Amino acid sequence: MPYVVDFKKVSTVGLEASPVVQALAGLRASEARYFMNKYNHEFTVVPARESQETIDYVNRILKEERDLEFAAKSLETSRFQVENIKFAYVFYDNGLEVNVMYTVDDPKKRAVGFKLSEGMQVPKELEGKFKFARQKSILAGIIRGSFFVIKGEY
Image (cartoon, rainbow, N blue to C red):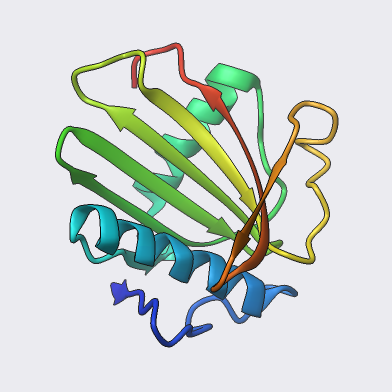
């Protein structure tokens, strides 16, 4: 069942299985605020069990581009298009968020982003492969993030 993420009142609905549930909920709310402020778009998530196609899409890009596979369990996803950009999100139980930004008409503006919830360790799959920048968020505390540019067609 789809859930519109409220960025004014942070909720842990759907993320209860995470050991960093509050931080992950804040990270999800931070994404919702970004999309509302930038695109006037409501950020909606669905349980992972109802969105295997999105998980498969993100996993395919991770595997083909960087030979990455995460051991963490996916909890929720989001997939939508705003203007000429397709977005896909997967939120994992360990506090990781993976997002794909894929412009329809500009292959130079396609990337995969990683965001780590406050309090979580860098997943072993990413250790030593990416440098993480820190960003302070009112909703999510300290977020660490990194990304890579997508080279293939998806």
